[in-house]
Length: 543
Image: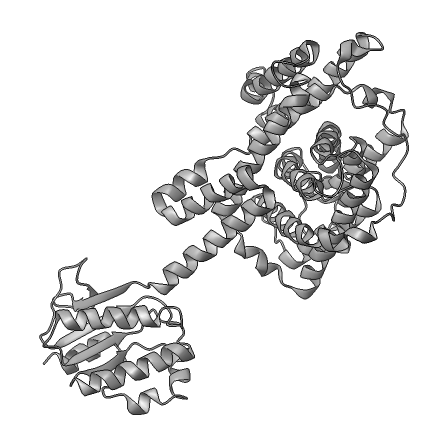
C-alpha cells in the first residue's frame, strides 16, 4: 500500500471515486447472490465484500483488482461443505468462514515461501473445462429458486418474476450497451451502464415485491438483513479442520489462478507489473479478513475488475471506496434488502455464469492438440458427474498424463543436408542429401528416465532400416539435459554399437550438457567423436 500511496496524485482521485461507486452498486446484488450459491445468508456476501478488498489493497499489486465473492469459488465452497453441514445452518456459516481461514493461510504461506509456481499445474484447458462445468452446475442449481420450484410444481408468481428478470437481464446484456451508444453515450460509459443492469433489475423487482403487500404473493425474499457492520468472527469447529484442509488447498489455488488471469489481462493495458508472490500474500490476507468478518472464500472477480478498470480506477483506493460504501449500506437502514426477491437474484446468477460458457478454448484445443481438448472435456464432465473437486483432479491428472506421454515419446528426426548449404533438416520435410553408411538423428527433447528406452528403440529401428550404417551421429542441439538413467542408456548404446562395428558420435552438445558429460565415463568410452556441429560431422564422416 505504501508503494501506490507514494505515487498517488490528485488527478487520479475522480477516476477512483467513480469506479468505487460503480463497483459498489454491482457488489450488492452480486455479493448477496453468490452468498446464496455458497449456501449462506445473503448478508454474508456483503460481509465478504468489505474487509477483503481493504486487506488486498494493503498487500496486492493490481490497481484494478476487485476482490470479493465470485461464482466459481462460491460453488466450490458449497460443494466442499455439503457433506459436513446443511446449507443455511449455523454450522455451515462457521465452516464457510473456517474454509476461508484455511484457504487464506494456504495462499499466505505460498506467497511467503515463494511457491506460486505450483499453480502452473492447472493448464488453461483444465481451467476452461472447470469454468464451463461449474457454470452449468451453478445455473442448474438456480432453476428451482428462479421458478419457485421445479416443473410441474413451480410457483406461478415466482416463475413469472424470475423469467421476466431473466429476459430483461439477457436483453440488457445483448442490446443495452449498443443502445446507449446510439443515444450518444461514450462507449466506456455505455458498457458500464450495461453492467449496472442487474442492479436496476433488482431494485425494480424489489419495488414490485414491496407493492404486492405483506405476503408478496408467496414470492420468496431474502428476509431480514442484520443492520450494522460485521463483528469479529472467531468461531471455528475443532472437529472439521482435517476435513476442510483438502478443499482449502484446492480453493486456494483456484483463487490465485482466477485472480491472476483477470489481473494480468488488465495489467497489460496500462502497463503494470504484477508480482505473483505478493498477489498470493494479498489474496491470503483478503481471505483471512473474510473469515474473521463472517464471510467465506473470496477471489478477484474478472468481470468486476474489468468494470473497475473501465469506470476509471487508477489505484487500490477505488476498492477502498467500494468497501466504504458497502459498509455504509449496512449501517444505513437495511429493510429494503430484506425484500430482494430470490427469483430475481437467481436470474442474476444465471446470466452472470452464462457469460462463463466460453467455448473458444475448446475449439482452439480441438484443432491444435486433442489431448488438451480431452482434458478440457474431461474436467467439465467430471465437474458435472462427480463434483467440483473430482473434476479438477481429473483434468489435472489428464494434463500431467498427456505431458508425461509426450515427454516419453520425443520427436526424433533423420537429418540430411540441404544441397549447397551447411543446413541439416528432417529428410521427411525437406529435399536433402544423405551419405551412405552415415545416419544422423536429431533428438528433440531432453533425455531422462521416462524416454531413454523409447529413444533407444527408435535408434534400433532406424539402424535396422539401414543395415550398411557405420556411423551414427546423435545431434543434441535440442537436448537441454541428460539425467543419470539416460546417461547409462547412452553408455549401453555405445557398447552395443561398438560390438556391431558402428561408431557412435555426438554433435552440437550444449555447454551445460557437456559439462555434465565430462564428469561421466561416456566421453572416455565413446567409440566415435564429439563434433561442434552437424556440418563438421558431415564433412568428416560423409567422405
